[in-house]
Image (cartoon, rainbow, N blue to C red):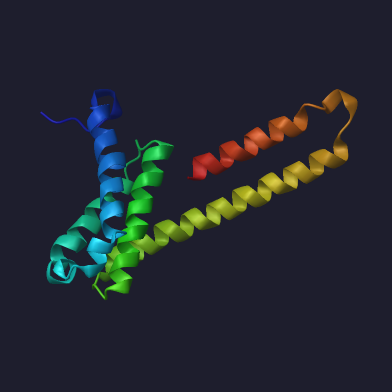
Length: 149
């Protein structure tokens, strides 16, 4: 009987899959051994399945910020390798990955812009009684950015 909710989750296994394995995958594909190996081209279906599985993990709602960053970084490495080695990725997977990264970039830019605007307006309104507001604005801005990531 498998469970899919975070209350019954094995957090050690989650961290192993989302952080440790993704780091191993990134390290391998960024290594000189991977660059010199022709195995990746001959096993394209395995490569595509690895990318697809990584993408599916990235869509889990229970991922922590650290886990989401690790998984998305792995996906980025895999898509870069696919491009540099002319590995065909199914169009639906490629579009989904691109949409994920473009959405994250847009949200990050919006949060950064909002944070800057708030910081600027707080500088203008700064009075002795509100001297702790810039710190609060910075924290709120960072929380927005972290929630996007």
